[in-house]
Amino acid sequence: MIVIPAIDILDDRVVRLYKGDFNQVKIYNESPLDQALQFSEAGFSRLHIVDLSGSREGKVKIAHWIKEIKKRTEMLIECGGGIRTLPNALELIEAGADYIIIGSISITDPSSYKKILMRVGADKIIIASDVLNGKIAIKGWEETSEITLDEHIQEHAPMGISQFLCTDISKDGSLLGTNWELYQTLRKTYPDLKFIASGGVKDVSDLEKLAKDKLYAAIVGKAWYERKITVEEMLQYDS
Image 1 (cartoon, rainbow, N blue to C red):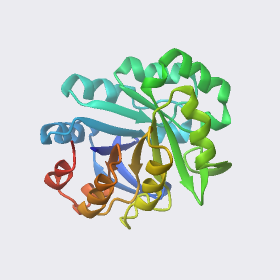
Image 2: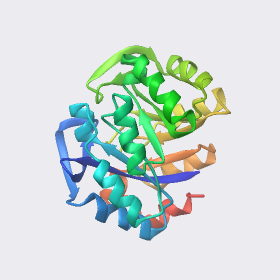
Image 3: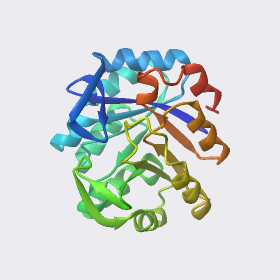
Image 4: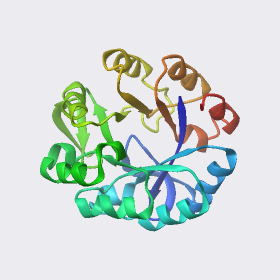
């Protein structure tokens, strides 16, 4: 399993939201670059970056941070938020992103999504299947679609997408524990796909459960920022 530390960027600062609520923001670092360097120096190979400003405004706001982080580290970068058009996607790829995370437009604008897929390639795309009460949430989690998680996966897997970032929004930023039963079910149902767990990791016991179920990757955010888990514990399950 790959353990991926998260950097959520809002107004050029590292923050965490509580269950995706922009009215519940906590600032952890004034510099995304400094935070990325900490994770790189610790030994992590991959970084998860969320453009919260971009998600809210519908345009990319972190390309300059991607460029700086790629210049200073060798980490693979996956990033999302604010990707609405092909130019948005290309801006991040050109800045150095190794993977782009596609969320809302896979449902709200399939035409733009297919343009991105054709130009960027399925191997560089991670589909965000963010779930709230069993349905896929969109537009920065401010709206819920009528598409179920299974419907979302079954639509995009045949397009060549192998990586799915699945967030249980009810757990995100809560430190209540990850929804490992959900990920266990997904692994059994779709054994050939790579699922990235996100949301709710409270301590090392969650990583232990996810690793035992042989999940592809797990993202750790607030648990690290709130010192509920150490770098050493995270790296113990990073392979």
